[in-house]
Length: 314
Image (cartoon, rainbow, N blue to C red; front, side, top):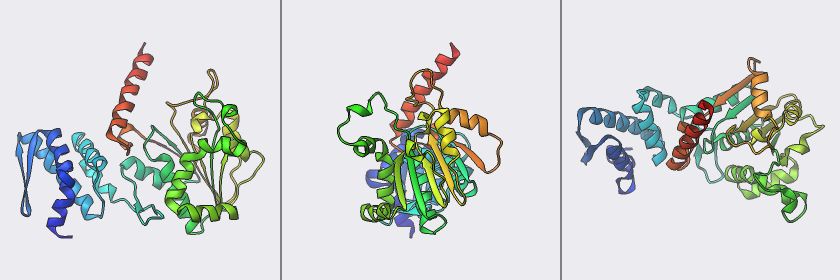
């Protein structure tokens, strides 16, 4: 790719990437042929230059820039950790049905994918939008395609966020489907609807509520338990003891969004405490910096965290 194409990718359509940098550091960035000129206060210019260098190295490695990339590079430069951006030479985790590469977009996501690869059981705990479920499904599809496992099993506890299953119309499957929707969505993205359907019919893919796991031993399987903060201690123990030979488990959850009845302890919190220190079990914690959704999601998470800290302080 030549320098001109780099400049186009860096600036973004309508210069939106550069405007983010200009607003953050109170600088002016101008592209003159193959040169980029930054003017403003010395500290702002220095930081802006570091961000631009980092973004150009991402472009060099085939990354498509988005607002999220730009904001993430700025946050690393602001905390003096710009050398970490080099680590984001993200290996491709999976190719979606539309041929799009799925790569870790943050250091936290990269650690998470490495932990899943290296451990039998991985806990991924953190706020909404950090890619916990999506990346776990991508890793499962990769393991399945390379025949490391012959089944993908995705499960969630059917705990209502203020709703009751009984009020939903239809049979049990149609009552449970809304809970499993995010898992279906990730699988459709990776495999395409037709391929997904074919594997379901063959029994290679199963998407089911957690209660369906009881009494089974899951061999040669990649098993993902999503929304695990809504399991009880008994459910979590039941799930963990389903582990069979040549299987992997990924358990994801957000301990700030527990929908269990008051007084019921989260099985996720309990299991992380009980299992700490056991080999072949990894625990990856995401922060709001790992959020890859709209930048407002980060701000919302921070605002709620402040309130929680204030409550604990009292």
